[in-house]
Length: 170
Image (tube, rainbow, N blue to C red; front, top):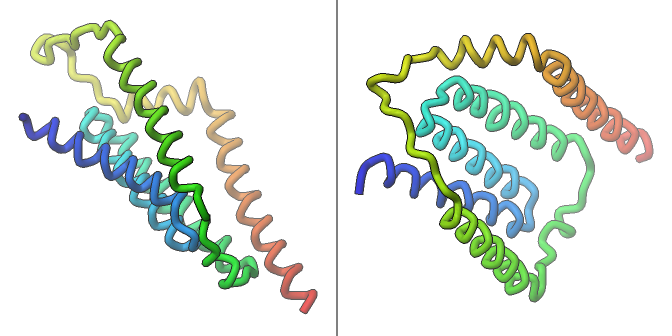
């Protein structure tokens, strides 16, 4: 068992565990923390894939900005703490069954896929993935990149407006 396989196994379990905890928890703050664990674990998987720029972007954008944006949304909107503690009766078995079926389908797909062996790293040219990714984003994908930033800004402004309207009604 290699160190890369062990790191992959741990990061995969953290990713899946964080996602399952995110849908299982009843308090919104705990959900956001679980989502942050999932985002950080995915960044670790990107490091294993030698996509360091994407991993750093994952940490900065998702683990940092999106989680903070969600926490601001929670703090700026009014909600009753009593509503968060309501338990989800008998949904545990259904959730487990759905996850188990999904796991079996994914496992079957992975086992039956004809994988092409990776090229030898000693003969492959080392490409600076940050330069290549930056060129792709700011040439072919500049409009979706800018639309995403506008969407995040609109979500933040919307949360502030909703919080302000709730404060005026009191």
